[in-house]
Image 1: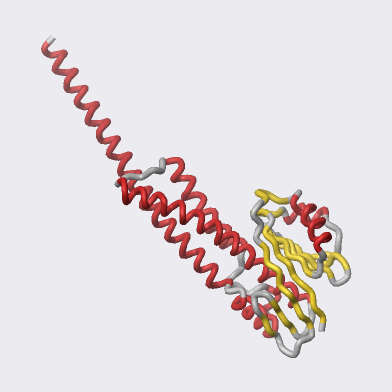
Image 2: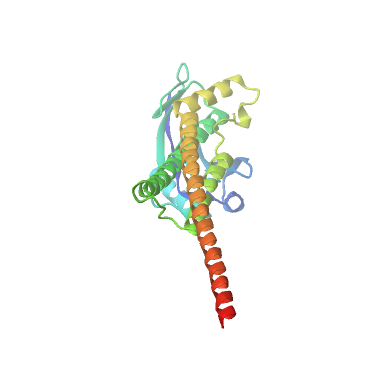
Length: 260
């Protein structure tokens, strides 16, 4: 049996697939607008994803660091706090077995390896989205607590609009970049690969974690919609008072002119 490791790390919010493809050397086995899959050396593979994740197979630490430095030049919003996962892969077992830390497959082929690296990478990306969502939920809870205690909001109009925009961007990125609920193209018409893909999704709990993020984002969005309604009501009340004051000024001015 052969033992190796796959290592996935989120280095940035996005990676330019186009720039990577035009500059990297290696045997490009697969590419589209979202991902690149290379054979770099003998039994060495790397998967590059648009959503900022790199996944290595059979790379030593020095090689991973060297390759990551290259990719950072084509990345946006580089993360200091980087999420990563390392999974051991055993090839040559009697049956396919898997845990979040160890995957055993009976036969090695490129498509099986791609599926493993894809699911590990999505797991890492979900960790980052979970962290971002929990931070935003905590911020939202602070505003709702202030509303409960003071009876008013402590967030202004522009800040609230930016907050709502941030939530919508996260929802869009999650839908655009993570293929949690869809089987990958390489599984179509292949029952063995499809079974492997479904087992990997279940092992890394991808669907439930994705649904949890969606649920939290839904709660946050509902709160922000309420904040927006309260802010709109407050601005409407201010506008009504301005109109009333202007009418009073006009009436007083009219009386003064009449008496004079």
